[in-house]
Length: 150
Image (cartoon, rainbow, N blue to C red):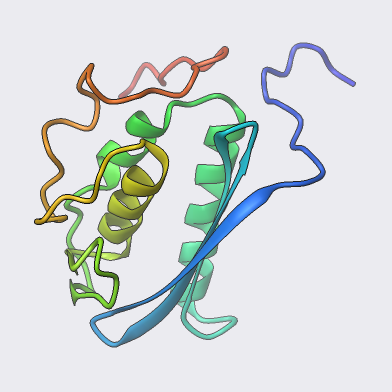
């Protein structure tokens, strides 16, 4: 095993939550898993198996999971996903996130609400304050350093 890799080994068992939702007629399922109280796994399933939408959401899930397991703080992961605009967008069946401007926007709001210990906001399209505000709980950063191009 290479000790130079800062990525944490994924635990064998997780505690998870699954949320089914519909965004503008598009059905989806978000499964998140935690270990020791920290979000460690994100799985977003949308669209038919083999479709472009299914492939892109699987790639997004893989990227988020890899970042979380490498120690990236959740607020810094979800901030760039907020307010992205593409279809599907519009009303959702999730009472905590009643409207989203895209699947990425829905995912950012759902993860923020589920894993930062904040109450759902009446207008979930606008999170209270900046996600990176010092009043928001932050996950430990471990050895994660933002890419110099960001």
